[in-house]
Image (cartoon, rainbow, N blue to C red; front, side, top):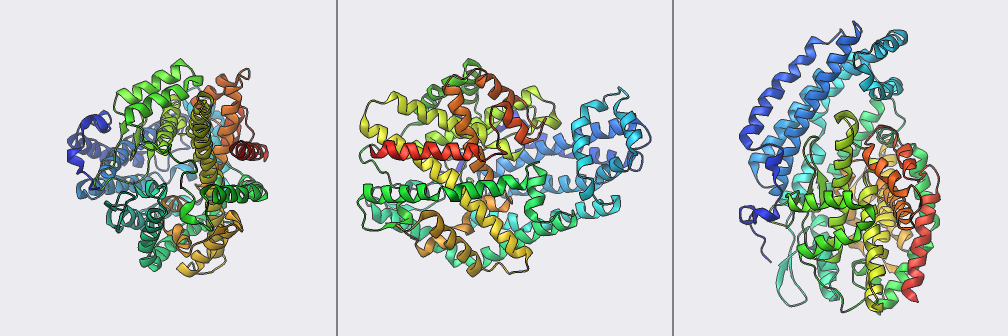
Length: 594
């Protein structure tokens, strides 16, 4: 299959980025304005303790500048993601990023100066009635980080270093999206098809084992060719995270990352421990998969093969939208109207094209509706991806509508809850609707795969990250050999004695973009567990469940993530949500085998 050029994409299947900025010329105008606006910080430097009004005006300036730069960066980056080979938008994205770093340098005095204001004086400022109360939570968060804040000059120097240390992530992004080329193989109909990020999972879902094996070997063979370069790139990124943690007086890079999201490290360790305690369930799943597929040996490339033959069908995008809308009906009419607005008003960039960023995401700018990037291929998995990403989008819609800019951006820890809740509601709707036993087994297989791919897989990723960072912090070198050894042992542990752990899977660490956002992936697993709990409460009609969930969606970052989830009736400070999710997984295994 030959991918179309971006210019050939039908407009109605693409997102309307003009809703952010009407043209590239408007972007240039805003860039010029923002470049001037960041100079306004100088008027406040050294003066934040002068008066409540001076502090208030500085924080207002910081808020306005932040929104301008966010708009510049998001627009340019999303344009670039349409076609990562387009140098124009790469350059614009780079300019926006540089402006952000410049703003960070110029505003680096802000936190140290707030911390230097005597407590009594700051308390009087906050009670002055001049508008500073708007920033109360933000200032409380700053005060909590006092042990991790440096002097003004040191914070400025640190801010100046950020741009220079982003190279590893940028190199990986360019390699993985713009430069890497995978071989062509013959599909199950004998047609030549080149492996891409967009079609790789679809190839692994082929009922033809040869196609699965050749796709698996073809993709990882390319990463293996670049194993030393990719290991050096990832190692550099880990060192960057460790450096900033040390400078900020955190005991580890993980402690630093989790503190940024107000999540206790105990939650991370508790997740891994709880999942590991339930690995026999995953081992049972692997055995069921092996027996159902009739295999003498089950290999890593067999994990995505459909367990139910004859039902692997495709869903045109219009049908996918209708299915998602029906599945999310328990969330109420208001939610469905927002969903329809997203479908109608070109929030979504639907299909893969040459150079388009792989995968899927939701993103946007405060003050403008959210957006969704897909690489839709018509599989059931991609129908669920649509529900997932629209969950992100509508979470942002609610938070942006309800909260001011500084409190609308919810933390990563809760970011996967709304998206996965949508998936859980959709699968349960589909299971409830079908009377066909084989279709039921097909849907259960999909739900089981969601558990494997999210709760188990992302926890394994989290364990890999934690191990890799700890080894680097202990002075060990993260060579390709060392990273492959860590990753191989995890696969052996997680998938159990029935699985043949092919050597190609040792290189999977080299292709995971989220490893360049340290300690992000564990939140897919915690979010999945929370979502299973929330969707169960809504479907059971528990009093206040839907209202509590809406309050959660509307609350942005107005309180720490653990507290936010309690609004929706879930306590992630305990292992209970993960244990409850594992119970559902076990029940699904029983139902599949019955």
